Length: 285
Image (cartoon, rainbow, N blue to C red; front, side):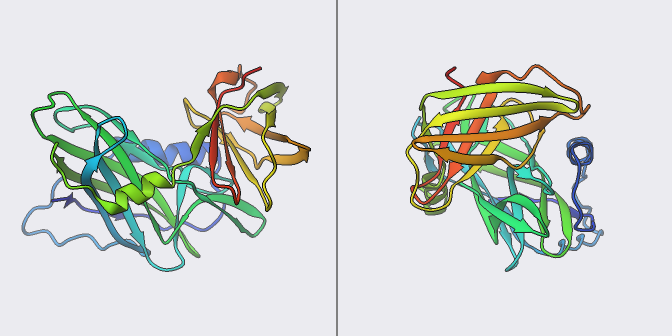
């Protein structure tokens, strides 16, 4: 059974959040201590747009890990954000501090959508999302008490950072959960095509250009670039085709807005198209 502790929401205007503001929100979420409710205290109101938040459990992943998932259900027309949220989104922040018998927990990200509004591009999920979590116990003979401290942003005409504390027990014999399996099936397929990358220092960061040997899709392609090791602001990718080569460029801007040594092996490229989502990890050249 999932336990949901008090929920906190802060109303914001729907203007872009810069890198520093995004990281500040995440740091507040990480530091925040929410105490369990006393019996005499009224429940805090649910933030607008959030209909349900829970941890699901059930089944095993491809590597034999136990499966759980963070399920966020939103009111119609509301959206939440991918791990790299784009121009104006709030990056999600998920920690499992306080869990017991937990060796590791890995969050899986189903393929997102790209939203365009008022000239800004954001990346995420409409009406909610199920994020599978591969759970590995320290002692395989015992259950895992999984505790998740979650900070997400949800938006319609306003944007609301929402802080959640959730917990559930993950056992070795859980029944397969169809929602978790469906979300896993939507995870981008990992491929390893030849990918040649060049970097150019900018006054506030680094511009990366990648040339990927990838046959063209029939319809539109959306290319998303990010660093795998840490969150930095990344501009909308400027992409075009040269036959079977996809050429894509984007600016990477760290919190201090200065040039930095960008490790080509740390680049993660996701391509969304009608042939399905694919993920490319690192540059081969």
